[in-house]
Image (cartoon, rainbow, N blue to C red; front, side, top):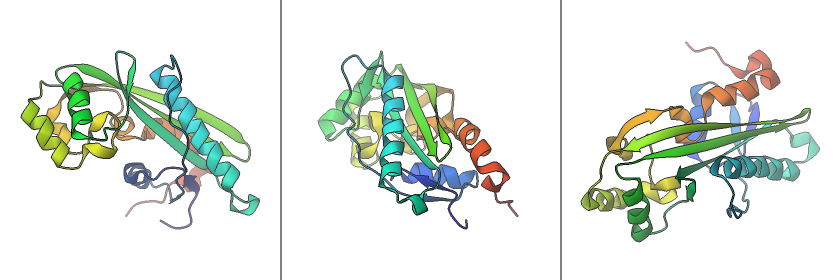
Length: 199
């Protein structure tokens, strides 16, 4: 895609894929930040804080001559205000997916852009409804390996699509990078150079 226009402060292959989808040339530069939830922190506020922290962490690591606009994102699944992290075991996946089964939950993704002239951020919030899942389906899904590194224990673009009866909001936001809001932030900064014309 040519010379990177931005730096993506994320190791997520899904976010990188979504940026490529809309023609944003980028380099992947993941960072580590403390993702602990603060007391009484609302899910949307949590992801916004983490996205801004990731962008700032990468910006601080860059030498002045390395600096390009930095984009960071964070996604969480929440049910009745409770934040669901990434399951680390079958038991945790059973707990999460069992609670999501037959119910509607929220997915919040925040994006933060930091560049030499300033910063901006947005939050995209969507809802996802699961049909009733059987214990056997949950166990099968865990053993595919897909849930382990996903907030809420599932990937909307993966096998879990078979579990989802309804989505309201941003599909790309549920995947981890809301393209409408991302373009809204990047377009003024990158001007028309953001897009390479297709064939």
